Length: 332
Image 1 (cartoon, helix red, strand yellow):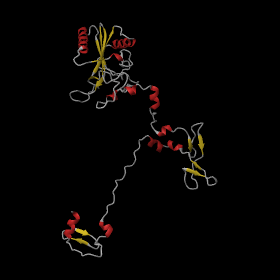
Image 2 (tube, rainbow, N blue to C red):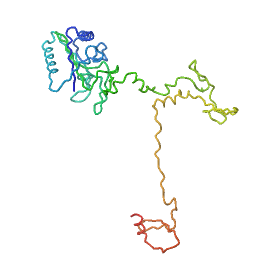
Image 3 (cartoon, helix red, strand yellow):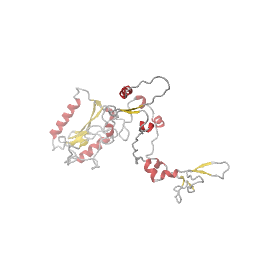
């Protein structure tokens, strides 16, 4: 469902923020082509939440069958057409550039062929079975249409019902829509939310508490400088066991400086992939490996089929069977 808000700025722009917005648009005047806010810093931007020219709490539902919004838009558009260029009527459209030709689907030399997203472009939630519009959330990029007429300025602004005007500074929702979660105080949220982690382990390890390589510099006045690491009598460098110590105390080396080595820094950033494992070929059991190529009792038929068997026992009569009979019994 859509929601809308019609703001009658009048001749003075209504609020101080609205007055400043209208003055900027009037001073900008009619332009020969679309202007990009990134290339023209002087162009005003719309922000429904922080702009101050609109009341975020006054959006109303555009219910099915209602023509209030449409009729007012048509009336204002007709007034702008009747005024014409002589009276200085201007229509300011805010949105994002449509980058492709709608007929061919190809990019155009002018950069974009029109304007889309003429609505609120923040406060979208990550909803199931919906388009991921939350990825487009950002402040100061909302869309709308403002008519600058001799009788005053009037703005038409719309948003989707699923978008919230309670947003953070980055344009993302400051609420979940679940009342049990949203009523949780900021202090409690801060206490239970996990702390953000550094990008890499290497970036976190800045203190020098290390067994250093010979000639390594100490970068902190309060850092501990240990002697260069060297092999002990057992040939190891990761542990220091003093054989002369009667207590046999184990003194581990402090190898914190290994985090600052290029090798560890690269891997801690997750930018290095390990080697591709060699495909595993499992061994297969072959009868010849157990009893040899020509064991006793190894029979072969004229058709090339063979069967190896042992008869174990010292009593009872032995019934002779053909090879084919054994084969049928063994495979059935």
